Amino acid sequence: MFAEGTLLSSTESVCPVCLKRLPANRVRYGEDVYLEKECPQHGFYRTVIWRGTPGFTEWARPKVPVFPQQPFTSIDKGCPFDCGLCADHRQEPCCVLFDVTERCDLKCKFCFASAGKKDSSSEPSLKKIEGWYRRLLQAGGPFNIQLSGGEPCMSDDLPEIITLGRSLGFTFFQLNTNGLRISRDVAYLAKMKDAGLCTVYLQFDGTNDEIYSRMRGRAIFAQKMQAIRNCADLGIGVVLVPTLVPGINTDEIGRIIDLALAHAPTVRGVHFQPVSYFGRYPQAPSDAERITLPEVIRAITEQTQGRIQRESFLPPGGENAHCSFHANFVLMPEGELRPLTRRETSSCCSTSTPIQDGSRKSRLVTAKHWTVARPPVTSEPKQILGSWDDFLERVNTYSFSISGMAFQDAWNLDLERLRECYIIHVSREGKLIPFCAYNLTNQLGLSLYRPQSQFLNT
Image (tube, rainbow, N blue to C red; front, top):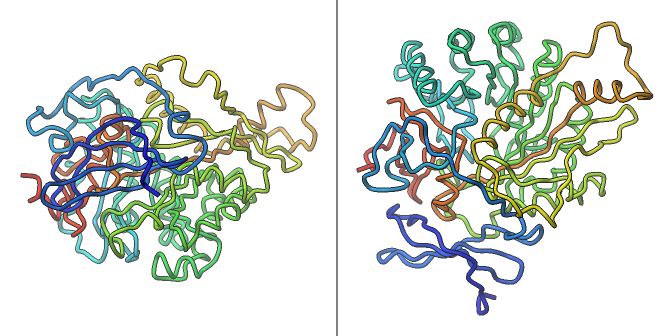
């Protein structure tokens, strides 16, 4: 199988055992692309990073880099060991994650945070979080904020955290949650809405309890649906976020999209995340346990019986092209999902995009499309759209996005991609760390940046 590989390009990565930085190659075998690297101490690694069409080189989108307005760390050991952001990072933040707690009311089989039953003594104070907000303003913000964890709803401070951010000029807040508390505590959800919560980013792995029992350890599908209904009652947008694990839920892609559309316009879209192996996971991964972005795109087309076409999906304008895909649609009254995006492969790589434009556009588009837009109170729902104004009104109210993002782990980490990351974690010390660096763990589960194992960052 691997006898006739073609070298596409070179990059850098890390050893999955010792996390030492290593030279790496992107090598094509047939239609598939692998990342290859060798550690002098721990041996050779080959990991699939792209399978089939759309092709790896076809998907590339050149960008002009933009460096941090205010670097907070100096370059000493090099990427990924100097994150802060350092002066060598090549993208502005778009979405910034605050870990407001390490506690969680689940113990999922797959968890990048290795969250669980911990006490609240180490949770950041409002004063600490104010410092995080101010650090983001120094870095060129305000940016979009995602409240995360652990399970952020284990904290009672979320309304105050949102209120504090709004007082400092931040306008878009999303809640990254398993949905358990907001399924039963409507009063708390309402407090967050009143404070300024825009979107619930809801863990949603499938449409039956067998999947949740296997991935999350509990049968919680009913709670997921109640969380959606509660958000609908309060006018809060919801994005469904499935973690895709081969052999467990990759055949659920079409059913998840159908369920999302059935609950539009409250559900604003689906954001697929192929499983990555960092934090807590059952064993060292094989290639059979990975699904790549082009496979997800093809599965969307196949499992929706061609209603959603591959040509509707675009590479990102902000982060590295091989990190994600997205497509925007409008749900028409008769049930048609009409695409608003279309990929023109003949010209996709002809010009370079200023990368900061992509980040800023992504912030605005995310805030617009993932927030519920109320229809005019004087208008009855239209079954026939007879004018351009009617159509624009429909787009505003019934826009729907389908996207996917492939996070990186120690086996497939590409430092070129990492330097262009715009999903940023704020550390306890106020450093701005790209998501895949912050959550990076070796095969023993020890990390560079997460608090429980910072001793490795030496």
